[in-house]
Length: 223
Ligand code: ACO
Ligand code: ZN
Image (cartoon, rainbow, N blue to C red; front, side, top):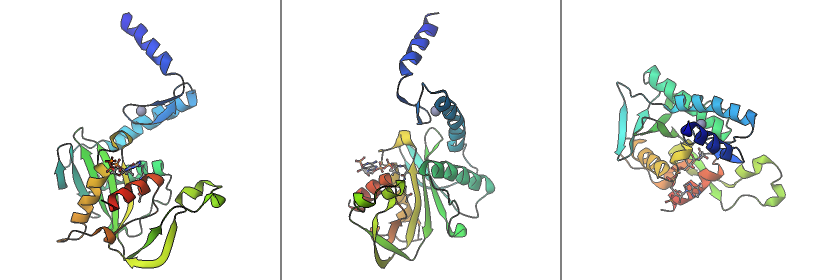
């Protein structure tokens, strides 16, 4: 059949270099069997992890044309907490974080951005803090950039400043980035973290930011 031939030709062209899966966003080399296997394994686990079926009791804290933000608190029903755990695991995997234990599990607030396609496409984990250290200018120079760790070696002030809300994770699904989802998550946290007040930029702090996180935070804090 015509259609089958077409499929084979398309697949053949894709078998060079890096491909990005249009549904899970993973970048892999289609010509490498190991990569393809890794992709298949990741694909289903990931899509299952971000699937959001809707909950009987959900705390919608913001609504938009393309989705909504749901807040999950530590004593919520186990189906909600399980979803948060699954999403956090995917996020930590992507970020390469392995210390999954939050400092104050019973004070953690998790904000999930749910898309119209019923998927968790954004996640922000916030916790109360008392102080933070300001990031000073740029990362330490090339002399010390021999290892992988260099990209997190921002120089911080050693003078603590008072703060209220620490953002320990912020993540947006790769295929939904640059649509202001992260910005809307942070705006919502500022609005909902402490009852009755809108937190100032100075009162929130991003912990251990990645390069993406730092680009976003710099932009967010200056606008
Ligand atoms: N490069 C340059 N500027 C950026 C980037 C980037 N990668 N990401 C955001 N910005 C800036 C832009 O100015 C953007 O506005 P514009 O699109 O109008 O130019 C502005 O920030 C707002 O960006 P959003 O669209 O709200 O950000 P997005 O929804 O794409 O999410 C995030 C940003 C969360 C950092 C995303 O890239 C991501 O999930 N990355 C991988 C995970 C990660 O590294 N998370 C941060 C970890 S640090 C921590 O958790 C504390
Ligand atoms: Zn995929």
